[in-house]
Amino acid sequence: MSDTIQDHQPEFAKEEQEILEQLYKGWLRYWNKESMHDPGANQSRRFYNFEEMLSYDMFGTTTRGKFIEHFENVFPYYVDGQMEYKDLEIVVLSPTHAYSTCFQHTWGKAGGEPFNITFRRTGIAKKKDGQWKWIHEHLSFPVDMATKKADFNCETEALDSFKFQK
Image 1 (cartoon, rainbow, N blue to C red):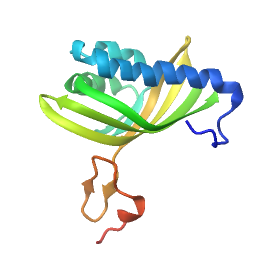
Image 2 (image 1 turned 120 degrees about the vertical axis):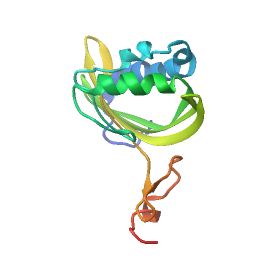
Image 3 (image 1 turned 30 degrees about the vertical axis):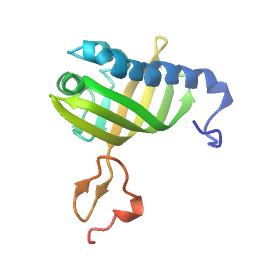
Image 4 (image 1 turned 60 degrees about the vertical axis):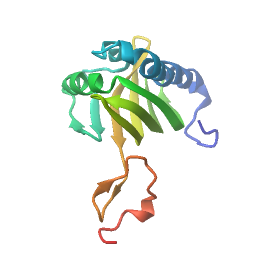
């Protein structure tokens, strides 16, 4: 996390650490060590507030109240994988709300097929009953507007892909 961002408020250092431990390190522990022994991805439910969860991701949009259906179809498909983060930044806005950004590199097998992707991740978390849970996430890849092709490794520079013609 960057010390140069003015949005980091010292009075929320405890909450920042809680989010790092509960959501990010917790998710890494689940994904890298537990998920392959959890075929229905049931143990990963602890990271989400399903009633409030809204997701804009590379698979499409999941509106509030519908995330459980998305979760139950997508998560078990990807249980055989590994994950790491790059450039993680957590910004706590209040004792109960925060957002975070990072690149998420995920690889392994999905439905028996190998995959290796890196995407941009933005998350909004809410604390309730002492636990931080996701209420929104946005997962995306850069897209070359001329070719309409996604860059599954997030290597495209913004100024190289915004034009509709080459």
